[in-house]
Image 1 (cartoon, rainbow, N blue to C red):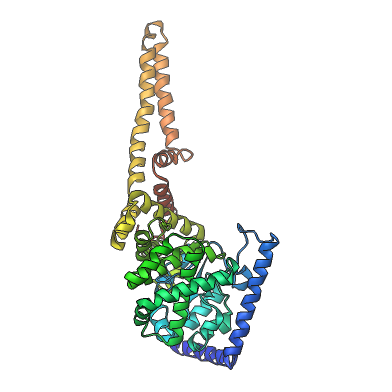
Image 2 (cartoon, rainbow, N blue to C red):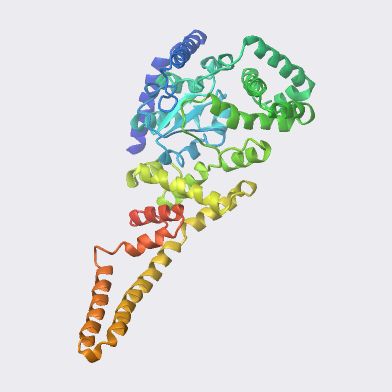
Length: 451
């Protein structure tokens, strides 16, 4: 019965989309789409010029361009945008933006998701607002990519980048950079790039080459010293230049043009490579996917999936999930500052050790033993002090009083009112990430799958 209902839902969805898509995304409609995005961009520039745009609180594209978007907003990158990986990221941010690249169907299915998954993704976006989509290229780049039409027709996602090169430099400077790029590229770089992209169509290759030029020109015209190294790499080591340009795009250029996201999600391997290759441009060491995947395995019994994601969000407060992820990231950096020189397996080991750390529970036990003994000693000391007055007839009474005071203090120490004192004392001597993880596990003790 459930299978028949699911089949019927898909058929209804297909009929709805087919009716909307008839001539919806031909060349002219995509040009209109691009014109709309250009109009939004011009409004942004005008707002900035008039000091009406507050960089601390305003965002572009605006919240209205999305469906119930929530902050903090994270955006996916290459490696974290795969459908089987987004579910480990969604619970730990307000909303996650899936930046859709203009990939042909085969490459889209290989690197992002199966086309058959798109209906459920769109449904999930509309239902929750926890997942969003945006375009990673201008709308005309999606011409002929009919498999992506459901996203563009149903959701009309905005182009994610807030600025273009022409917003910062003169056209003639861009033309000079283009001439340099093409001159160096003809020496072997373009051949190497096209060889790597041989399975892509000519249109897709042109789009990717243009993207590489955008990164190259941004570095050249914004005065990044690394641009000279990249020029040399393009001649001497084209393979390395291709990857280094991609990393520069991820960590230098795109953040500069992004007025929407609060966080950018990369895999451990990409962050590690960036730390090694970019030298003085050290990216923030932040591992949301690996930590999210780890927490998903600890907090639910389901594998990475929409169901596990829903289970997590239904069972745990959003703030607590975000806080524990940040705490685990802090733990990684404090316990092993050079983690990027190691491996994802080492990262997993560190997470396991932090999660199973017994430092605070042990300290609580020690304090429970030590503090009452100390309090009882007060009674002994009082008794000793007043013992000299025994001959005066008051020592016995005062000594007895001392023991009664100690006895009452011990009782109060373990009363309901004073039950949290050992815990507070233990946490005072602990690192903040240890206290945060301990608090999280204590709060959700009956729900955690693997404590």
